[in-house]
Image (cartoon, rainbow over all chains, first blue to last red; front, side, top):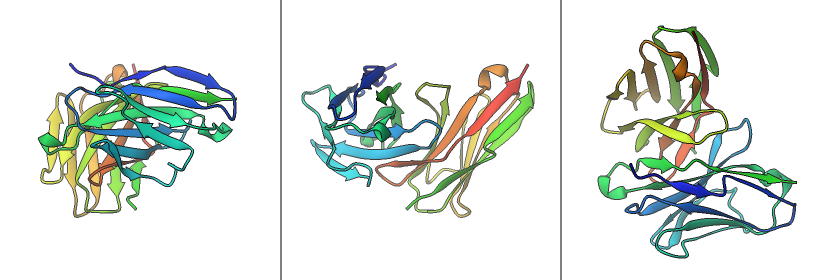
Length: 115
Length: 110
């Protein structure tokens, strides 16, 4: 069964460094998403992406964040200058609107630790 | 903004019990509602998706219902097993993004 994959599974970085989290959505999906989950808190929406542009973003998704689909398979989340509070699990998801359901399929997540 | 609440926050039951997890949401203009399972330190596994036009969905021992007018969804787990122990999340979809509840942490004791 097709699945969303994410790399790396765990990333440790120092405060102020740039990180890029990578995702490979399901191949025939058209909408892509990033969510984050701070330890012990709710899963929070960050951004959705369709047709090579951001379709919606939350107030969390400020200028420090950016997303890109650099080729036909990868979808990346970049954090330019990481802060301690960026430490969280980051989930990528994708969906296939053609089915009319907007059911989202989630990847296993990347645990980001900022020290 | 959609707010999703899950009750109870934690639940411990003996193996074999039938149980109900509750989810409520504030905005009835929900497009669909999805239930997920999350194991500790892991990702989200989709369990059931209910479209706004549907009232329930079933998969094996799981049954999820949706009542948009009252802003409620329930996940019914029949004949619970220790392997069902996990955190169960509900998420309401307003077209293009999900709003998640805090989850119900389920422990099924052998």
